[in-house]
Structure formats: structure tokens, C-alpha cells
Amino acid sequence: MPNINHPKICPICFIGRKFAFIKDYFLKQKNFSLYQCQDCQVQFYLPFKSIGDKGYEQRNIYKISEIVKPRIFRGYHKKFFKINKNFSRKMKVLDLGCGTGEFLSELEKKGCEVWGADFDSNAILMAKKYFNLKNIYALSFKDFFRNNNLPQFDFVIIFEVMQYLEDPIEFVKNVQKVLKPDGKIILSVPSRQRMMAELDRWDLPPYCLTRWNNKAISNLFSKINFKMSYICYVEQFKILVGAINAKTRLGLVNKTISISGSKGNKPSLFPKIIYFFGRYKEFIIAFLPAFILWLWGKITKRENGIIFVTLEKIHG
Ligand SMILES: [Zn+2]
Image 1: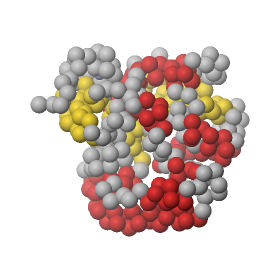
Image 2 (image 1 turned 180 degrees about the vertical axis):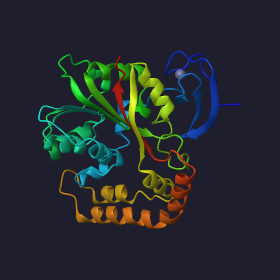
Image 3 (image 1 turned 30 degrees about the horizontal axis):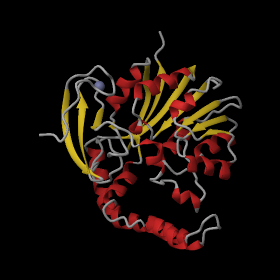
């Protein structure tokens, strides 16, 4: 028996009435149940409720940016620049969930007009401090879209956002409104089909509300008449390393920052050393098992890592 019974109607597509029960979870002293809508194929956790902006902010996922200037390192950022090479001076890009702004900063260097929004006000502060970005807002997406003076964009970027949304349909409708007729949506989201998905706690509740595969993404964007024109899976090996390490992670950096207690002062070298050492330690321990899994995933065509897609309007 599932912890929580399935709803009458799907909280994502508001059409589906048939659900497959996937799994129960007990996390942060609370029960959750995961279901899959047989209509839209999206998997969602019950209770289907966001922990709110403050709850996410308290996770403090950008803490490391206080001591190390953010730079492009994620697979989806690199992939974007690999497949999109020609940027004109007038190109406008909106990054929803822009975090500390390192991606927008790269685009600005290439001559684009860049805009961004993130509910995490600490991240936006750092984006301003490090990269001097102008059109970036510490707002929820709902509030951001209330601005009637938004320009029309050539690209709307949605990296690692979908899994947190309470209302994906309303969100993609808003995205469509600010997109030029031939504009593109670039999206990334954890692949729920990946190996060892249960180990890394990366897209689990209470932070995440939904889990996605390429079919579920296609279904959602078909509602605004968009289709995938490009799909690949990034960070396949890195995510496996992360999953293997999740059990052994010590959180040394955060502890060291707390101990050195730098409040506005220039942080010492010590946490930086721990940070870089930590990254290599994880790699050394997990390298071999992750490599074997990665190879097996390649052979069996597993959709490991993070889904990266380009979406374009269906014409005609
Ligand atoms: Zn549904």
C-alpha cells in the first residue's frame, strides 16, 4: 500500500486520471509517494507541494561561490556553446534559474543582451558582484513574468528548473509569450532513467516535485506546439561518480567555512584547499566503479546523466 493515495486528477497535465505507483520515500522525517501519470508520463511526488523560495534558499547551494568565483563547468553550459556558435550583437537571451550568472556572463562577452531570474537572492547578489550583470532579478518566475516590459528573446534557457516547478504548464506558456516566433527553448533536467538514481538524492523530495524523461518533456511542450529538435545526455560519467560518492560525502567545505567564520571578510585559503582536495578525493574513490557503470550504460543505451534538449515551434 502506498503511503499516500493517488490524486483524482494529474497535478501536471490536469487531464490524466490513471496513475502507476512507483515508490514510497521517507525523507526529512516525512512520507512521500511517487506516481506516474499514464497520460503525460510525468512522475510526481505526493504531497505535491513546493517548500517555497525561503526553503530553497536555506539549502545554500551557492555557498561555494562565496569563496570561488563561479565559472562555466556544467555539461549543459558547455553543450550549449558547442551546438550554438553564431551569436549576433542583437541576440537576446533569458536564463530562468540563472543562479550566480556565470553562463549569462559568457553570453554577454559574445555580444548578447542577457536577462536572468532566480528566486535565490544570494545567487543574484553574487551574479551582480562577480559579473556586473544588469537585467537580473531575484524573483520567482511568476513574479518575473508579471513584468509587461520584457523583450522578445531568441533563446530562453531552462537549466535544472523543471523538477522544482509546481505548475509546469503555466510556466511553459509564460516562456512562449516572451519568445520570438523563431526563438528556441534550451532545457536540461535530470534523467529519471539514469542508473543509481536513488543514490544521489538529487531529484528527490522535498526539494524536487517531479521527475522527467524525454517522453514527458515532449508531452509537456506539445501543449505549446513545440517539439524537440535536438536531444542528448550530458554529464553521464560525472553523475555516476556523484551517486557513488553521495554516501561518503563529508561536507568538509561547508564545515570549514563555518569554522573560519568569515563574515564579509576575504575568506582564507584553507577552505579553498579543502574544496579542491575534496573534488579530487571523490574522483579517485569512485572512478573505477563509475567507469564500469558508464560503459555498461553505453552498451545498454541507458539514458544516464542529464537530458539536454533544444525545443522549437512546430510550423505549419
Ligand atoms: Zn498528467
